[in-house]
Image 1 (tube, one colour):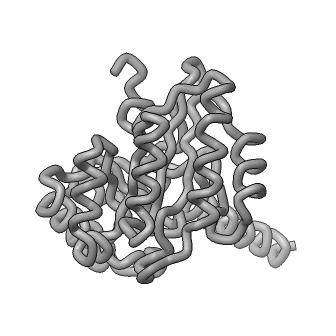
Image 2: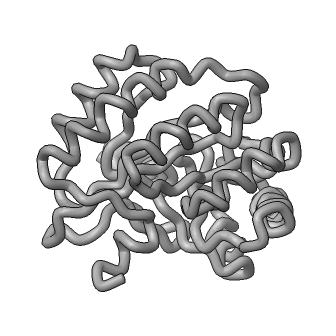
Length: 234
């Protein structure tokens, strides 16, 4: 019986750790949000892993529909494509921190985690003129030490309500997935890059965005940045 009890405790501990690391609503390892108010017909469109060689095409789409977005960028990509990062900020989109080199943070030391966030924070601020207020962990995976890193850099973690899986689905699948899951206060996660890879193929994301934005507008949703979504009176 003791062995059964120990086995059950171990399973429970494993499940709790999995939730702490990957659970979208978890705040166990660091302060984090995954949605805005359910009482307002507003949503936030977010893009991870940029800037990339395809980001300018995405900026053109957002400009055409006159909507803001939040870009969680990798410091290494900002360092490689500073003009694209500046163009994103100049278009009044919000810039968030997505680490410097896009590593999985689990099983990493506190010093490693802080350096990844700090290096990204520095190059983003140097390039765009403003330090991010938000951080999204690569792969949505948090770890011990992240709370202190976020505190030191004054960052709030941001997960998502709806994950588009645009790195693997065709445009039609991305659209179906997001339209079926989006509700008041949703934070939608898409990608304008693929980690820190050069010349990523984001054609399906671009195609999906051109369908999704007018479809969501037709449903009465108002697009906001993450900071605007979290402050409904903004």
